[in-house]
Image 1 (cartoon, rainbow, N blue to C red):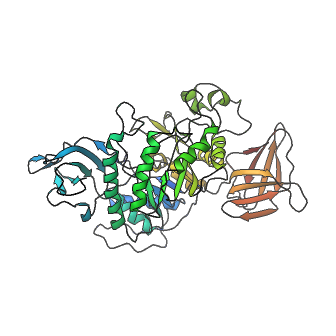
Image 2 (image 1 turned 30 degrees about the vertical axis):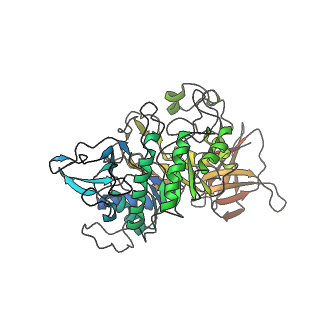
Image 3 (image 1 turned 90 degrees about the horizontal axis):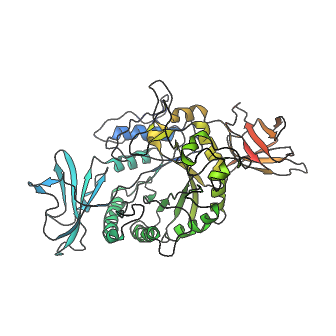
Length: 516
């Protein structure tokens, strides 16, 4: 995805107070450091750009709606040469003693220290492109060695790191992604793991030097995916994690490793929530003493996991999920909802680990007249602000942080030039309350309900028991911690009750939170 140049459609804001730009050759507009629409999602996957001004616009747009974290995918460390790299009239890989050639297509320019072996390690400009030829040998005098041909379209990662620093944000660049098995592409090919680790060590040493002093460098993202379920004793992906994370620990002590495993609730091919707790522990065991954030993918964008309330197990799946599991009920198509899986993950979060949730900001398939992702396949559609609110709601009170894949194209695309992007809709509706938890709680001897979430201050809580009308009750207490809390005197009746909030600013929830 890092090679696809999507149009960046930034949310427009009135320019106010600015941070002085750093002295660079390329002149870009003055930065606007304001956060004008702080939404509940605070991190996004982004695509590094070789153009610094494009990077600045993208970082500023994310920052303006409350984003403080940026994550990139690591390029694939692939077996095979890049045929476009030519030096002195010969293929770049045509050097004595080569055992294996790897290619690595990225958007970053490495520092001088990356070139360790004079004559062999080189920065090469060929056919208007920039390449690096790097030996992975432990010694420059080694008679046999593996080499990597790196091609780059500019210093996208460097631009991202420096712009994030200017806006007070954190970046987690992706680790080099492991070579995949030809027969099982969902597994790493361990025949190349030693070379991968040698290259990873070189890249991270370069990061340590290039980004020294930048508070924006928060750690790295593990780019190879796996399911967060109980793993086998000799699981190949867990083996990869353990090996590569040991390299991270040696090169970047104290930095955080972010992993984003997926869940799959489909009865035809997924797994039940009961397997998640063990899966979380298996992943955590690979952290090599480093801080780790496990950002569980909520599965709604791919259609692997539905978002529904505790009262909706027998309801039909929503229309956008029919292409994935058929026209069946939630219980027939899935083992459970996002809430069930996140609650299972939260039961026993391992030491040294933060539980994050990655809400997928897209639909399984595009609808007519809707923008979305064309490449790489499969096609995906753009979602709505109200559905994103439901995903945040389903993440519950347990997630330390809520992030989303991915900023481009799903938050920036427009069906037409005169229609809003998802980022525009967030900027317009960020003050709408989102309830992520609710439970009965007595206060000063009176029965009531406490709700937790976002943008709850003041106003009323509206209770709608099954089969009866809605009752609006004024808030009588408000508190603020990691989440906001509000309390109102009310005793729920009936099998279940839906709760919405209208805050003092007059904004109302887009969806109800249901308690039994």
